[in-house]
Amino acid sequence: MTYDTAQRVTVSLSPHLARYLDQYQKTHRLSSRSEAVAQAIHALREKELAEAYADYARSGEFVDLENGDGLEESDGSQWL
Image (cartoon, rainbow, N blue to C red; front, side, top):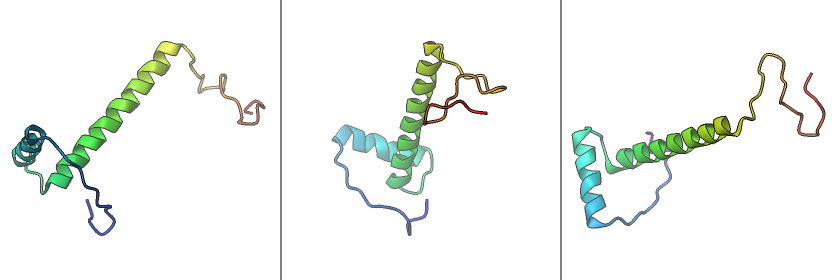
């Protein structure tokens, strides 16, 4: 992580979560709490994406990538 482009945020954690964060940082040899929090946020994003893909797969609304069946232009016209 480059800190010249980082945005500072402040969070409040319970003592239990703060201890876990410190333990995780040390166990995984991360350079800072910020790096541990960044990894946690990345994991949340991956989980959310996996859930969205699973929901899509369950929906049965698949797109045929060979010929574009199932895709429509945003104006309602068909893809060529």
